[in-house]
Length: 88
Image: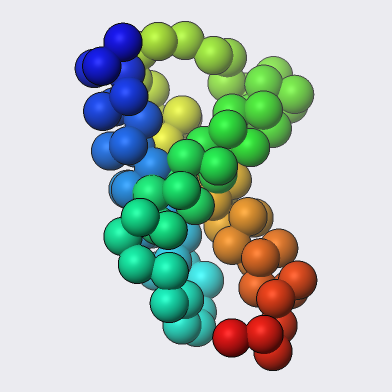
């Protein structure tokens, strides 16, 4: 269980960091915010991948899983920017 939590944090950090690099602009959310962004994006990306039948949940690492995590994090970041525009 502890290994899964560490795995989730690492994937969240990677997905969140790549999403912040891909979407232009400043995000003053720090490392913890980046991890949360990536974890939420991972769940959204996993859901979307499963809905499109392109990726299925498993407990092993797959390149498609990280790609869906990044896509999900990008979507979450864009939605967050749209809803908090001008509230910094």
